Each structure stands twice: as C-alpha cells, then as structure tokens.
Image 1 (cartoon, helix red, strand yellow):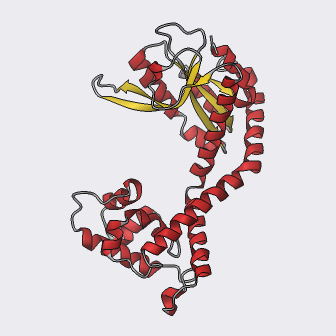
Image 2 (tube, one colour):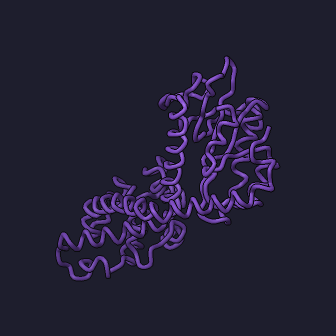
Image 3 (cartoon, helix red, strand yellow):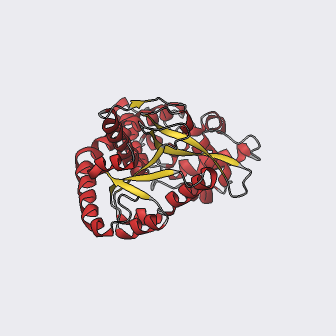
Length: 316
C-alpha cells in the first residue's frame, strides 16, 4: 500500500516544507562544510606545490610520479581550465588526463607518454596565474605566506569547481545520521559495514551496502550501492529488507535531470529479486510535482525527511 506516492493532494504542501527544511540546513551548515573542504584542499595543494617546487619544476617525471597534482595545476592557470580545455590546448589523449585525475595513475600502455606530459607542463606554465604565483616572474624564492596564500586561492578554485558534490555529500551524511538516530531510538542496531543486504538480522541496519544485480542480458552481474538497508524487527527468513536512497537537491532543475536514476536502479533490483523488493526514497529539498509524478509512475514511493515518522508505515 503506497504511503506518499498515491497522495498528490499532499504533494504541494510537502514540497514547500521540504524546500524550507533544505534551505534552513544550507544557510546554517553548508558554509562550514565548504570551509572544511577548502581547508583539506589547501593542505593538498600545498603538498602539490612542494612536489613541483612551487610550480618551478614540472618535468614529465614529476607528473608521472605524482599524477594526482593535475587538478591543482589546472586551477593554477588564468583562467582556470577544465579537463576538456587542457586536452584540447595541449593536444593530448583524453584517456591520459582522465586516468591521471580520476584513477590518479598513468595508464599502463600510454603511448608517447613523455611527449604528452611535456605538452601538459608547457600548457600549464604558459597559462599559469602570475598574480598568485609572482615568483615565477621574479625568480625570487617565495615566502611561506605567499605559498599559503596561493594554495588557499587554488584550493578555493578546486572547491568551487566541485561545490555541488561537497554540499551533496554533506547533506547525505546528515540524512543518513537522521535515519540512524530514528532507528536507534526504536531499538534498531547498526550492523556495521562490509555486509551484503541478505546478511542483516532482524532489527538491524547498515549504510552504503552493495546489492548484486543482473544486467538485461541475464548473465553479467554488477553491484549497485544502496544508501540505507534496514531489516524490520518482525522479519522472518526470506524477508526482503527495506532499501532507501537518500536524495537531496538545492534546486528543481537538477532533480528532473536525474530522476531516471532511481527508476533504473529499482528496475534492476526487481529484475534480479522480483516484486518483493522494497525500495523507497528519503527526500529533502527541491523535488517538484513533475519529479514526484515520474517516480510514482515507476512504482517508487518515498518518505519526506520532515515527516520521517512515515518510515513506520513501511513496517519499521
């Protein structure tokens, strides 16, 4: 029996309350989450500056041994450049840049590696922001305060380029903490990590578990992450746990762009485990009627964070 997906007459009021809850959290806590991320990034940038001798040593061997410095180097230019812009300007393979930044390693079979790394160095040095790295023109040894100032500016650029994920991750941690508190007040126990969803006992829960699912060919199997998995107190052998996807959004546009993600996930789960799959959303923020209607049409129900007690209606 649906809890919220079949009650469109309540959606408008719930949307307004959800937006208010998200905005209140954002004003109070998002700046601190951003500052924390920037402080961590500053330390990482300072380390990268040491490795490159404050951008005065960008030999291919330095980049080869420390591929993770590349995002910092991109943010050290004027203007800061995106990955695709670096690839185009330097005339280098996209796979090399993505491997250095995402996998933090050099591809094993990288052709013309030294030549490509030289192109990266030349491009970065040509575009380097001399206002924040004045020693590149003066030839003088930079002072500690100058290095820290430059690192802070580059760190701010790095965080600015990924500000949405920073806020989204902080919000997800807060949402999972709210679920954890609600469950523990009702006698549920956190089961720890490293489990599969079918290893949970009655009245236990865990976060970020992997669920093995079969792809459409029915042969290949992959794992998909589930934010929260809860085994009800009165569960019996073979009972399927409640799976929850924590969702937050700071604007209406992005939610409608990403609304198919949950539909794909629940479709994969049902194809693998059958109709007994219990999969719901835990919503906070900007989710409009278009988003809700789409999810309802896909057979996906939800709980609003401002009415977290609705979890009881799912057998908890």
